Amino acid sequence: MGKAAKDAAFQLATASTAQKNQALAIIADELEANSATILAANAKDIELGREAGLTDALLDRLLLNEERLTGIANDVRNVISLNDPVGSEIDSKVLENGMSLSRRRVPLGVVGVIYEARPNVTIDIAALCLKTGNASILRGGKETFFSNMELVKVIQSALAKADLPAASVQYIEKPDRELVSQLLKLDDYVDMIIPRGGAGLHKMCKENSTIPVIIGGFGISHIFVDESANLAKSLDVVENSKVQRPSACNSLDTLLVHERIAAEFLPMLAERLNDKVTFVAEPKAKALMSNATQIRDAAEGDFDTEWLSYTLGVKVVADVKEAIDHMRVHNASHSDAIMTNSLENSELFINSAGSAAVYVNASTRFTDGAQFGLGAEVAVSTQKLHARGPMGLEELTSYKWVGKANYLPRS
Image (tube, rainbow, N blue to C red; front, side):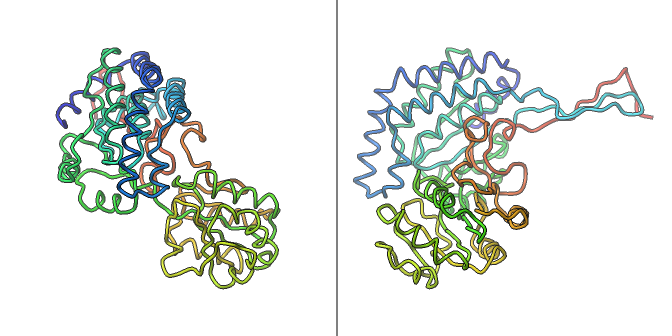
């Protein structure tokens, strides 16, 4: 598979934008044309997932329906409309010796992606890799086996119709974990590994891969409600961040509230979310939430937990500095927000938070490739090298230096 992917990447690197867009258009159309078959396969995965005792959060990640499938197809069409970064110049200059020197964007080559119960990732990765001239080797979780088999059939059929190599997108069908270990060692053929899943998957890839690994997707998301914030509007943002789609990696995990407004804000919070959320509160917060119907004391490790469910950690803090200190200790690396009307506090929060995406008076749920205008995303990177936040088309390219001259020798 590695050899086939490398050969395919060589062909994709010189494919025209029109040819790549044609393949994407066929993928989108065939997703909708084959929706009945795809959804029937997904129903098998859902049934097996329930029998295996998967949580509601995991089942939600796994689920496809007509609306979600149409959304996935439209995301592919959106990628068609985006500019192809391959071949574009990042910058250019003319040296004193007359040489024209530029940096030109080029595909990475072969991207290996290991992911769990997210069948939409199969299409997201394939679409973005194709647009940027990269071949991909995919390995989804066993929970999505039947769904992914049908999705890959659609992709490879579209590749053939667009006269592109089928090995541009390959899928590791066998669930054997040993095959993942082999993929992580294919540095002769694979140029980047992207894990999409929990902290355990990222740790395993980072420790065992001989290929550069993009770390992302995991991180505790926080909102700090400052004393100057508009409480009613802040409550709307907190609700959206927590309950719109709690299984998403950018959903709210921990709410930090300034002590001067906690007595007013926390009862409002409990009243708004009582029928939706279980609160996990430290003592100061719990004492102010007597109207909460589902609440328990925070235990060790709770503020380090990515809930991915209708559970919300709550803590009262003295000020923005204590909020930032809490975030530094508790893995604020993904998406974090401050609700405030203080320019000074907002700038302190922006500059101090170690997150890939930081928001002022906005929901953490905006951290998404489509929301950012990037099209679908291959991952949300929380590391500090190469790419941060939602990884779209440009993040799937590297560059080469191009020098042009008139038969110029070096003196």
